[in-house]
Image (cartoon, rainbow, N blue to C red; front, side):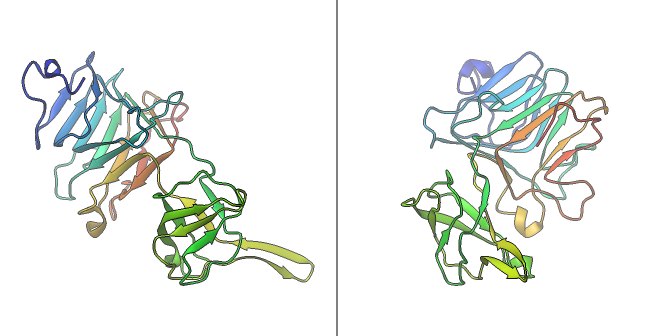
Length: 284
């Protein structure tokens, strides 16, 4: 356990700015609410995050580099069978001028010959469409189907104009489920733009045209630091690379990725399976 003095030889657990190494054969369970901002976290054993019994409990983990390497190495936030059921935010820190890990870069989780498991709670549906047009200045959205979304979560409303920048993000403040199949959600801030939803007829043809509304929030969140990522266009990445023989496993589902990707850098996508082979065992 991270919280146990014996895990650190009776000494202090890592402090702000320090690096840590988990050798092969060592399995460390992160059971603390938050960690200092670590520099490099080198995982050759297992670093495992266990959810709390309280679904609203929020754990944070901060680092500049996380490198999971070697056969049997594991970075686990939930599993396919048992997803992470409380809340966790993993934040990567750094800038374009920080030293690069060869191939893997910086401000990243790097994976080589190991396993990365990130599994949040499944949400249904992840996106739907508007039942009726939402006008600029309005604060409610009528959805076309039943959703499991909650107050406090964030949604994205797609543009229905020629300008994609008319897409908007808002936080849900209230949900009216009087008609559970057509819920009405109230937004924290009025809409800046009109979002169209109707069936248009053209002669004998009809086209159903409706703005998509997607749930952006998840209980497992991976992000770049909010202070510098957006202004510098330099967020976090997940970079998975080994010998092209399927010798790594990266499984990512029901996870929120925010302030990710590194602009103007080749191959620095939010999630990058880099020349790992047929990708039989991995998915996002």
